Image 1 (cartoon, rainbow, N blue to C red):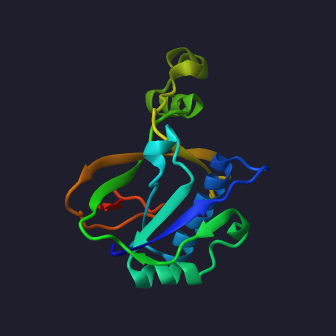
Image 2 (cartoon, rainbow, N blue to C red):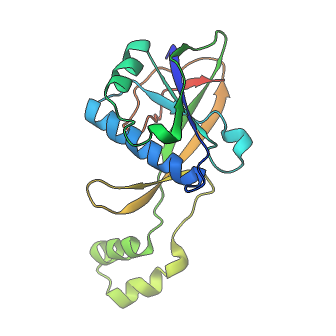
Length: 187
């Protein structure tokens, strides 16, 4: 993780920043999946100043070769009018590090009811009484709205930012650029 690229959202009167960030992130995810990348991490350097959201900047972290390979794939098609792409740059010396990971929660009461019916042999009415509509858990974390390629369903990708650390933790990243063990430079 010695290089990075910043993607800054440009203001657009037709689309709010959250919608543009959702679209940008979806395109990044598809690009990482198609390339089979596990060496590119992400961060949202504006998130502390953006309140509960992610801000207007998505930062990609990796090696110069890995980031060049991603950019050569042309995963940004359709977003170039909405994004200002920085030059590939070296990570500053003596930077801190931070982990970003996905957090999942059972938040769909219908799915919880189906599971209770299957696992506990409950009737639909019993499951509805046991698991009311407001029973789904919610998280107080920022999220990206995405659509599942397999099911076509919309879901929220909740992202937790870990504590700032002095040393980097090595590991692999998933197709969202997140990791449960690896950190990215934080500056």
